[in-house]
View 1 (cartoon, one colour):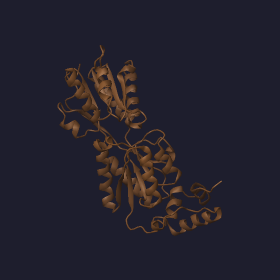
View 2: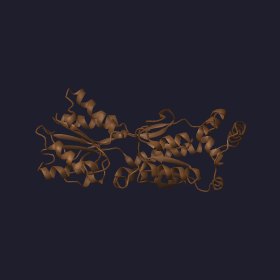
View 3: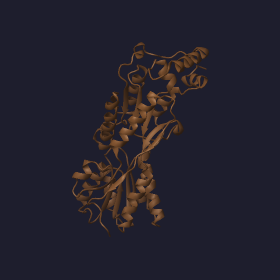
View 4: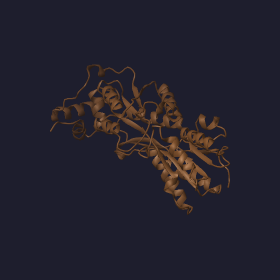
Length: 338
């Protein structure tokens, strides 16, 4: 059986990422640690696959990984604000950053593999979290340093992540509507393989249970990234006889689609339907009426992710950290009492 990077790390008593950076002669690794790793490599006969150009580091670079998507990621204010936060902190610390995108998961993984093997980046920040992600599997198996913005689903104890308490945020958004007298409350979320949407839905369900309101599965919509069926599914939700009087929506972009369907059906906001959304983006502020929205502090999420990443680059022996950034519900005009 071939010797792996993890075998070397186990023998040397260091993390796989330390072995990887030793192979690249990274300046953040002490000479003592490098010597220990090299002795382990020699003992095991490990042959690293290192590009000859990776031994010189003038500027350290962080790769920022967007979710695989032909379009949606570039329109979402959350990603733009998180990238702005990452860039702001990197600029202060004189780190470079580069955006990594792909139309599909296969294309994205291919780009990441190429960049990591050629030594173009020192570490990665993943701007999303979802179940069984091949990108995370690859980065972990190769011992590469990465931070997830979102809750870690794989290798949770070894993963650095920065997140909101999305379960609590979903619960509080739903309880806000309950306090206004609503009992027929729907939830519209993205693909529930995306952890933030699954957690917000779980928080929504907990709020209903805590207030002895029966959960109606017909009131829960899971809308994938592709938008072809969004209008039809939302229209079916609002066109039923026992339609909801309020909706918790997982982001402002989807809330805007919901508002468009309401206009088509002649429903007024908040007269016929109250809406609470997430992200507190420009869409929420410029919408008419303005949307009540949960501000998840996307910019701060980016800053914290970059801070943790640079800390771990400069001190590879740090334990994997987990940071929770607080959220805040911003009240506007899209909700009314019943």
